[in-house]
Image (tube, rainbow, N blue to C red; front, side, top):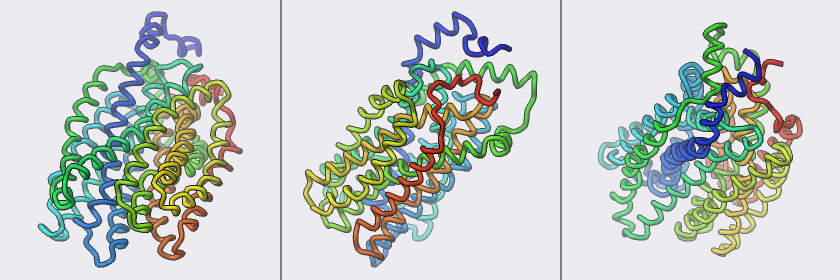
Length: 445
């Protein structure tokens, strides 16, 4: 089969994928936003609710650390989900795998709404919480890669960064929704009512959101590139996708993961740990932090596709380099602004940090897709993405709290975040520009 045939299977199919591309991108965004709403709802609740209801301790920071530890458990399950769901995505299709991941995520989040607290059933409460968190992490491990590929493998190369950035709007949009729901419940209810049952409403809403996401994902078709790769695989059987990725593309996996260190650690500091810092370290009301996160995430939602348009014009690498340098600089500015205790400056700190995150997110989808061949792309992209999440994102809140306990200053956390930005900077300097990549030609040179 010629490369031309792979790129343009027929005029009819090309016309169909072109006209349906915004629908595919919208479906991918909707499903991703739902899954990230579920995942981030847990993280936000860890700082506000779980540390008290499921991990009671004499020291509030100890309870928070334990709550964030279960949050990190979800990240540990993500590589497993990336391997298992990545395999199914490469063998059985992007669309079917995404539907499965959405159902797993939604079901586990919905069940959290009905979990009894530690005071009711004792140690069984945190054990059940951890079990459901593991299912969440497993589901999310296969979500992002499939959502990005569903768009990248439908779209044209000239606008790949723009459309591949739509699934990346899912994390800030999901976090925006999670923080917004919790903020609304917190404002409408008394502290006692919110801690007793109000927070459960936010988790129960997951069922409705999953139904919406499921309907949208059932509406879209499988990607043309996957269907063509399946025909080739039938004629030329190969090994397991994961084995091929580890054996032939491990350098690309490590490089791609390293480019995310600044983005991933920064995102969890700017949008999650900041809630703990504002409420526990500088002793302001939690509504200040939640409001700042809401505004910052809203700005990021708009900034991601806007910066992606620029990435389609000047390339992925310049955006990566600028975002990495900005991470190093803003990490210190961020904590300096927080320590002023000024609501306006706290909002500026969070918004600035999430703008840096938006710059990374604008190019990650396209860049990762352009590194791996179609037949193992789901596995490669998912493994690289979730490896960074485990090494950088999952530990960021825990390391941040530990650093503050030891040094008593946010600038110690800033140094850690700057180091994560330095890792991304080095990886971005090593990486080659991929803007002109033909997805059907990757791995065939």
